[in-house]
Amino acid sequence: MKYNILIIEDNPLVCEAISAALSREGYNVIINQTGANVIEDINKNMIHLVLLDLMLPTRTGEDVLKEIRQGKNIPVIIISSKDSDVEKAVHLGLGADDYVTKPVSNIELIARIKAVLRRMKVTSDLEQETFIIQDLIINFKTREVHRDHASIALTNKEFEIFKLLIEHANAILSKDQIYRAVWHDDYFSDENIINVHIRRLREKIEHNPSKPTLVLTVRGVGYRLGSRA
Image (cartoon, rainbow, N blue to C red; front, side, top):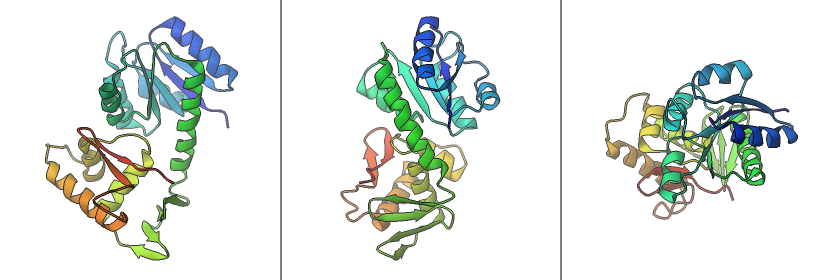
């Protein structure tokens, strides 16, 4: 399969360098230098992955990322000269799937693209087959969860939270993101409702809820899925 990658970057030299490296790897490359008409570009070119610069001339990268996330569930890798661990966590919490810093190493970037696309292939198959994480088997078609041939009964909201974390494996999801995706409403900082559902989900799927390995807390940011191993 030949993947289509959208580069959203205003520096033509950076665009040219990344585009050349990706083309050598067999990817189709589309370039948007302003961040305008992003959803149109994604739909028109059947984009599989977005490389997004945070510093754009007419709008912020964060706004572009929010627009993409509202309209499309496709992977986004942020490219930025900002390099603090806190910023990485915040931007991943907004819904990005990965993060690389400038000057961009083409070898590192391509490796990260391949890793994200592999994860994307897994999530694109979720509705058709089972997903296995540690000793849990999750069937997204029947909405069933099993461990050692025994069924684990999750409520609809618990299942949707777990499914959301799996669909965004390796990304950090904020409480706002979880609430909007699962409750389909605006989040008004009612942390208790998220905390309660996460606690009940852990009580059902974790071997030791006080030391979770499946649903992990990222302090001050949100939650992420644990390792599949």
